[in-house]
Image (cartoon, rainbow over all chains, first blue to last red; front, side, top):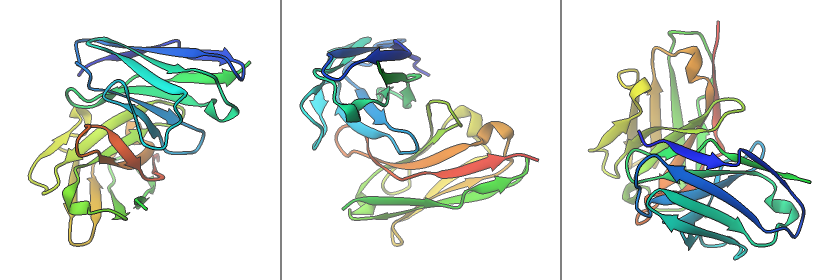
Length: 106
Length: 119
């Protein structure tokens, strides 16, 4: 299994802030890296696929970058509805997820 | 509109069995690979099993091999997970998730069904 490690595990930020979440893979996953958002009691929602492609319908303030082992998810200007848990997931081999980053309101 | 609706969860004793179902609509089910992903209470996401569009290729997480069986009925637009020899550590919300045809990602998810294994 490919280990995925996200940092930070939690993050406090304010509306309008620029936020970056990092995901590191235990081995190269090329650009087979996806990002999801999950709100309490809801299913995860795909935000970014193939490291940097924006899923249809997702606001352009979300962006992703990286390749190999190091990836980032950036939210350019936080909105109230963005406070949630974010997960990275590799699809290079059997899928595995990071432990999640909880984004909270400061 | 793509919809995935899981059912079949509930409370089961250790060693017992449950069969989860996922009813798909709004897309050509037979053209898509499908997965089960679970989430233990308060924990992160964990992939459980994969099935190809035809059902000919199947994969499992190591900890469920030999206990869980994934299957699908393309005529009924349905995905299944037969869960036997249940353990306390199988307690989780189970989601069915559609695998995007080109991106190897999970682009649509059901609302989940809770499985609780406890005596």
